[in-house]
Amino acid sequence: MSYENAVEAAEFIRSKYAQGVETVVVLGSGLGAFADDLENAVRIPYESIPHFARSTVEGHAGELVLGEIDGRPVAVQQGRFHFYEGYDMEQVTFPMRAFGQMGIKNVILTNAAGSLNTEMTPGSLMLISDHLNCMGVNPLRGKNDERSGPRFPDMTAVYDKELQDIVVAEANAMSQERFESGRDKELVDFLHRGVYCALSGPTYETPTEIRMYRLLGADAVGMSTVPEAVAARHQGMRVTGISCITNFGAGMTEEAINHQEVMETGARVAEVFKELLRKVISRIHQTG
Image (cartoon, rainbow, N blue to C red):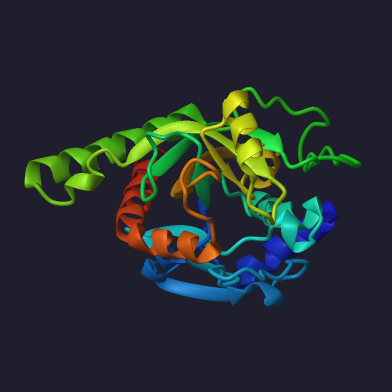
């Protein structure tokens, strides 16, 4: 996708929603309910946006929702495009290119992920501190357009420290409130921090592969997020990522893994997840 295509998509989105947006949220499998809480929302189906692909996975509505959280404009991708769907990396990362042309500064990436850490149980959340790209391809491969970013971008700090600190502070405040009120005690310490390993999919991993990724230092595995994070950083956008832990990796328990389990776990933690996202977005806008 060319720079000009990203400009065209950005101009189309702005024609439907004129308010300046500084933050975008990408919602993973089973987490789409957050978009329904936006106030004064405008919904744009992906097929209406020039050069956008189509989302084909259950749990991904395939809409860009623009609206307000506490009076501040936010864009929400209700569903994303995956490499395993047959799209190339330019298509997978194209929304980030369009958001960059819209002047969006902050990117919150979410996903459903499998835990490789026995302390991270299904239903908890993981703040992404770093990632492993095991997808077999770099999303910046090919000709580089300097108008988007440098040929060899630094990836020392893909996930912005200030944004990570905001997520941790808001999660700690939520945990303290739950502890003091005596409600949802199983969610008092619901946020962990770890390394996300991105794989091409669509198969889930074998037990031997899970053992290998654990040895490499991964705390969770999934099939998304890293391409978007890299494309966003390439453009100088601030990135943070949060994984919803939906299952343990293959071989870590006796249970088989299936997509329905992913969806059900996402729905189970939806309220806590939405509360955290709302608080994080409000805090980002307060701190500028």
